[in-house]
Length: 560
Image (cartoon, rainbow, N blue to C red; front, side):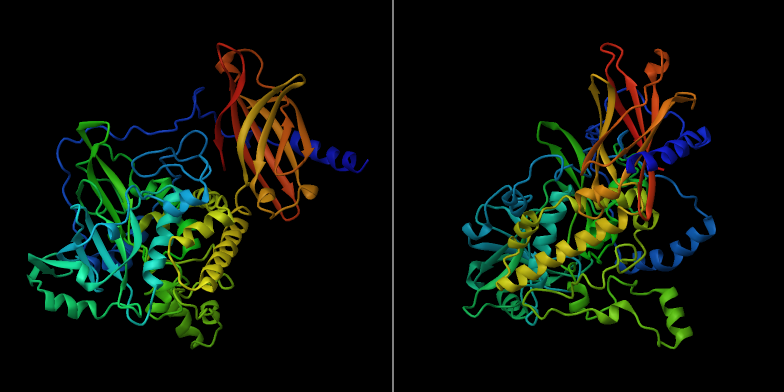
C-alpha cells in the first residue's frame, strides 16, 4: 500500500518529462573500446623536454593563468573515454583494480618485476641524481641494473621513503604507470664509486667528479639505523630512452600516437580525487615522465610510454617537512587566500589550522578530520588538467578510490616497511576515512550508478546496475528508488515509465520496451533517475539490438 502511494506520483512525474531533456543518439551499435591502439611505431626518438621548475611555476601561477582567464575557455568534456564512460587501456593507463582480481599481495608487490638489488651488491655509484635539492644517487647493481637511490633526512626517518613506496603501490593499482620502487637497507661499504662518477647540478650539468670522501660526507645527511645501515628508496631506471615529461597542455608534436590534448584526457583530469585522497601535493610536469620504449612483442616497433613518478611528498609529508600546515588546503601562492587574509586581518578560522600531527615515526601531517575532497589543492595551480576536471571526471576517479578494500590498503602500507605498527595502523585508518569522504562527496554530485547491463527475462528486458552509494554504505536501499523511461532514436517516448524500489547494492528495473522495428537497430535511450532523501540524479543508458541475434545490450552511457 505504501509502495502504491509513492509509485503513482513517480510515474506521473516521469510521464510528464520533456523529450527535450533527452540527449541525442551518440553511440555506435558496437562493443565499447577496451584498449586504445596507441603503440604504432614511432621510428625516431621524440625530442626530450627539459623541465625548468621556476619557469614552469611562473608560467602556471602567473602568466598562463592570466592568459587563460583572458581566453574565456569554454568547459569541455573529457576525451580518452569509451562509450561506457570509462577510460580504456593505453600507454597512459591500464585498468587494474576493479577490472581484474587483485589480491593484497599483488598490491604489495605493485609494479615489481625483479628481485631487490640488496641481493646484488656491491652497487657502483655513477653520479648524484639530477633535479631537486635532496641527496640522491644513480647506481648500478652487480647485475648492471640501473637505479635511482633516495634517502630520508636525518630528522625525518621513514617519512619520504615509506610514503613514496606506499603511494607508488596505490597509484599502480589504480591504473597508472609507475617505476619499480622498493625499500632497501645497505652499508656505505656496499657502495663503490666509479672512477668517472660525477656530481650533478639540479639542471643535469656536471659539477665535477664524485670521490668517496665527498660521497661519505653527503651520506651523513641521510638517516642511519642504529646498526649503521642506511634505509633508502631504490627506483629501477625506467626502460627505454627517457624524454622528459609530457606537457600539461597540448600534445607531443613528434609523437604521432599522442592525439588527445592532455588537458582533455580523462585519465589525467580524473586523477584529482585520487591525488586528493593521497594528498599528492607535489603535482607538476616534472613529476611525470615519458620514455621511448621498445615493444616487448616486436623489437622493431617503438612508442612512448607515460609514467607518474616521485611521490615522497604525499600523505602529508610535504606539510610536515616544509613545514607548512596549509599544504593540500591552499596553493603555496594563493591569491584569493592572500586577499581573504588581508581583508579579515587573519582573524578567520581556517581548517588547516586544526590539522593534527600524529607524532608517529614515518607519518606526515596526514589526517581525515580536515580533509575536504572538493577543496583539495596541490601546491601549484600550474597543472592544467586538474583545473579542467569536471564532476564527471572526478566521479570516475572517486570510483577507483572506492574500490580499494582495507586489506589492499594495508598491503600497500606494508610495502613501505614502517617500523612502528601504530604508524601503519594509523595510516590504514586514515586512508579508509579519506576514501569514504571521497566517495561520499563525489557520489553525491553525480548519479552514482554504474555497471549497467541489459538482461533478458521471460517478461522482457531488464536493466540492472550497481548503486555505488549503497554499496559504499553511504545511502540506504530502503529509502532509494529508481525511475526509468525509454525514448527512441528521435526522442519519442517508448512504452510507459517504470519505477522500482532499490533492492540492494545492485538493482534491476524492467525496461518499458525498446524502440519498435529495426530502424537504427531499435536504438533506445533509457533515462534512469535515482531518488532518495536529499538527492536526485539521472543517467542516460543507450541500448540497441544486435542484427544477428536480436539481443539487446547497453552500447553507451551518458552522464549529464
